Image (cartoon, rainbow, N blue to C red):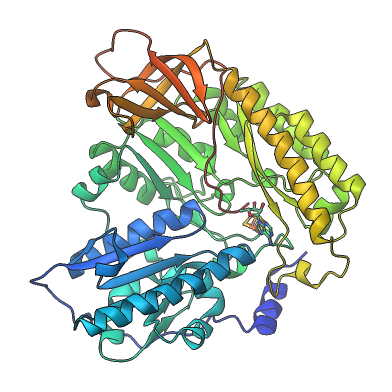
Amino acid sequence: MLDFAGFSLYLERRSYRRGVTAPFLPCISGSMTQPRKLHIKSFGCQMNVYDAQRMVDALAPEGFVETANPDEADLVILNTCHIREKASEKVYSELGRLRVAKDEAALQGRRMAIAVAGCVAQAEGAEIIRRQPAVDVVVGPQSYHHLPQLLAEAARGGRALETEFPVEDKFGFLPPPQPDAIRARGISAFVTVQEGCDKFCTFCVVPYTRGAEVSRPVDKIVEDVRRLADNGVREITLIGQNVNAYHGDGPDGRPWPLGDLLRHLATIPGIARLRYSTSHPRDVDQSLIDAHRDLPALMPFVHLPVQSGSDAILAAMNRKHTADDYRRLADRFRSANPAIAFSSDFIVGFPGETAEDFAATLALVTQIGYAGAYSFKYSPRPGTPAAELQETVSAAVMDERLVRLQELIDSQQSAFNEAAIGTTVEVLFERAARNPGQIVGRTAYLQPAHVMAGPEIIGRILPVRIDSLERYSLIGELAAPQPHAAFVTRPDSSPQSLPITTGA
Ligand code: 5AD
Ligand code: SF4
C-alpha cells in the first residue's frame, strides 16, 4: 500500500510539480467596459464539469461571459483529465487546434489566451508549455481561485503557472454562482463536498493530481445548497473523488459522515432529490445505509466502483476489500432499500490478470446485477505503482475481455430498462427535448424519460407511465393530472442510466 511516505517518493520519482507558484500580482483587470468571451472545454469526470462552472463564476467579476465558440473567445480554458493515457493525449491534439485559432485571432488583431486547467495541468506542469508554447496559463485544480491573477500575469507578456496545493481552501475564495448563472444551468446541480483521495489504488493518479482527501464543512455545503434551491434547483448531486470518505466539520463541532450530511440536506425546502458520487466500498458506513433506508429524497441508485471480482487482483490494486466484502455490502444496501440499483467501474487487463481472475469479475457482475457500468482497459499511468508491474496483459486479450464484459453489462442494462415498460415511474423534468413538443427528465435511476408536454412541467416530479424504450431513453406519458406541488415518494422498483464517474 502506498501511504504518504510513498506519495513523497512518488513525487520525487515523477518530479510532479507540487510547489510551483507564480508570483502573485494584485488583480489588475478591474471593471471592464467590453465583456470578454470565455470558452471552457471539460474532459473527464463530473468534478471537472463542476470545476468549469466555478471557473466561470470566478471570471464573471472580471467581465468574462461564456461562449460556445472557441474561435471567437478571448480566453479558452481546457479543463483536462489525466486518468487514462487516451484522456491525457487528447489535450495535446486539442491544443494543436487552438494554436491555429490563436494565430488566426492574432492576424485579426485579437489576443486569444489559452489556459490549461485540471489534472493534466497538475501532473505535467511546465511540460505543457514546453510541448505547446501557445499556452499562456497552466493551473492545477486547487488553484482556480487564483485564475484572475494568473491571467493578468500572462497578459503582461509572460506565462503563468500554478500547480501548488495551497494551504487555503479554494472554496473560501471562489465567488458563489450568481442567481442568473444558477438558473441557466438548470434544475440539477453538482456540489463538491470533498476533494482528493487517500486510498492510493495502485493504478490511479487521482491521489497525486487531486491531493490528499479534504472535506468541506457542513455549514458551507448547506449555504451552497440553499442558494441553489432558492434559485430553482431541485436535485443535488454531492460529488467528490471519494465522496463517502466525507467527514466535514458539523455545526456541533464534530466531523459528520456523509449519511448525516444527506439527512440534513434533505430538510432544505425545494430539494427533492439527492445523489452522491463516487463512493469507495471501504468507506460505506452505517450512516449512509441508514440514509438510504430513511430518506425518500435520496435516490436509490448507487455508483459503487468495484474494479475487479478477483481477490488477487483487488489486493494487487490495493482496493482494501474482497469480492465477498462487496457482495455483502450490496446486500446491506438492498436490505435498507430494496429499490436500490447499482452501477460500477471495472478495469480489465490489470497486470497479472489471469483468465480465472477475469472469470471472477464476470461472476461478480452476474451476481450483483448492474443497472449499468463503466468498463475500461487498464492504462498504465507513469509513476503509479502498477505502472512498474512487469506481468502485463496483451492488448488483444484486453480487447477481448473488454468486449465480453461490456456485452454482459449491456445485457443487464437492457433488461433493467425493459423492466420499466408498463410501469409508472417518477420523473424529474429537466428541459425541452430535441423533438418538438417533448420534455425530457430523469427517473430515480438517471434514465432519460420523454413525454409530450408543455414546458411548465420543467422542475416538477411527476408520475409517468412508460410505454416503450428507444435506445437508452424511456418514452411514456404523464400518468395522472398534474398535482399542485412537486413532491417525491420513494420510487417503485424500476430502472436507470449512469452518473459520470470520477474516482473511488
Ligand atoms: N486505467 C484504466 N482505468 C482507470 N481508472 C482509473 N485509473 C485507471 C487506469 N490507470 C478507472 C477506474 C475508476 C474510473 C474513474 O477510472 O475504474 O473507478
Ligand atoms: Fe482514490 Fe478511486 Fe483513485 Fe482508488 S480509484 S485512488 S479510491 S480516486
